[in-house]
Length: 276
Image (cartoon, rainbow, N blue to C red; front, side):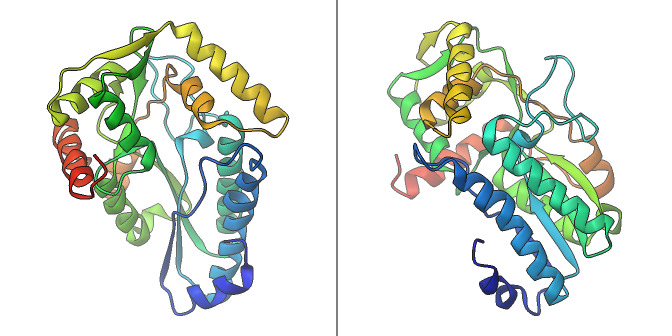
């Protein structure tokens, strides 16, 4: 992504590019990598795709490009004004801007997808870490756990990506991709504990502890520093919940069946991979 010369060969003869590469968490002193990889890397791949004559560029963005819900009872949608969350969100928001500009200028067909908290086979390390904490009875719960989070099952994201690459109506559009409805953090924990076959026990903290972590995270990032645990704690009592109605309508895309089925598949994959 950071070597433009390598991307032209990679996109040669390609009909559609699915751009899901990026970085979420960096080292303490590596926060500049977010802009270099997520934003500039996207610009590099766009340029290469245009040069190679790629038809459609599907960009996998993030909920962080828009931020958090203003109100718990109002889901975010494609018309929600963006308030990018921290440096990562800013890097993804700027990448979205580059993708949209490429479409507006007639350089290439584009579609942007915004997934949320991933789960399912092949899940990120952060989700496996949560499984281990639940197995140990140490899952961190801030406040009453009633805050809402949209979840994105990996297979359903792949299905949406394929639909986005083909649907004429998706040209120049943006779509949230997640399960049919958001879940409370407590519901997510309980469902995952059931899939793991354990009773849910949590390490409880007041809601203001998460808010405090977010303040510290913002201060650190403001001076170019990053600490993953503080960052994650800072967003754990926020509402990050979206509507997927537009994707269902335009793409004919169908969200996954249930959180329970998805979590069972997640656990089965993690165990088979020797991660639990």
